[in-house]
Image (cartoon, rainbow, N blue to C red; front, side, top):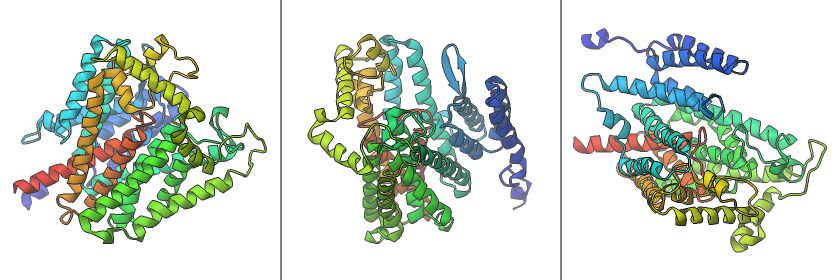
Length: 487
């Protein structure tokens, strides 16, 4: 007891007072950024380094909040996001922690996840793709992004294990920023705040918040939805309060008004998978009203609400006639039955054809990670209106990394799913309410990502963050199970 009393208290144990000043410095830096990106970035950097030395979970929470926003500076014709710098600071902090006596090794901290083998395979392929890359700088930047996302951020989030107090600021940051973006997206939808290319229901537009693309916005919110649903349905008392219901409604609203059919379908599969695994783990009593109402009823009500609201012209102007909310469902079915009869599907077919051509021409190492868009510039496709991603993660990695890139995608996602299910089912009865809820939510986010990535590519700043938190939860659960099994 005396030794415990002599141990110096952490900043978190002293309350918010030691953390207020670095947070204030970061806030000042954000405000200055809009006048001077360089000055604001420097101030933010000072505050963030200070914060990371005091509280790694709170530093992660700030990263989660700021990652969707396109804050950055141009360095040698490439944009360096503020979130990239934050990831570097957190990585250095983890390295410093690993040097302490009896701490985990560097490998254990960063690459000790249960899915390290397919991840290492993907990263090695990415490095090898430099040999055939159409743009070496693009490929190097993409490799660094993947290391930031799947190595650093997952490791930082996993460092908190599944301690409720350490996860609270991260959860608050994720749900808070998702709710704010949802409100902004709803404002866009109501008053046509966006480009004509996003028009829907004649009087409105598809919401994209700050992501620039509705599919990215819908995908982001669809990754958040399983996490808030699981905590509301299965979490401890503090996660079942009014704010969780409000967050659920707003996130569901943003999924619908983004009109991202990939997000819609991904959410349906996510909820189904969550219910099935919860039933298997703890019995049919887990499919109760706290799961059914927020997971099924609220999205249906929101869908009908947006469909009715779509007929109301609040901007007193009309653009070209386009699909309604209900029309998006019928067009989704129609695009499957008659692909050539739907414009979006025709465009995707052209993109997929180009990705297959890139794979055929570069079957072994591809055109370099992130190089598919360069391939489209060099080999323009008639009738293709833009130079997008492959709108399919598997074809994207196939074009970028060759045939083995597709194998990497399948292997990696299978490992995520297997460990997500195993982490919950293996010791479902011994998990706390928080651990069980986070495990079920992580599974839902992974399923949503896998399904949506058949028609989009969601690995980008901000968009991918909820998935990274879900992977950290799976890692923490598997580590917890392995530790218990060794006792």
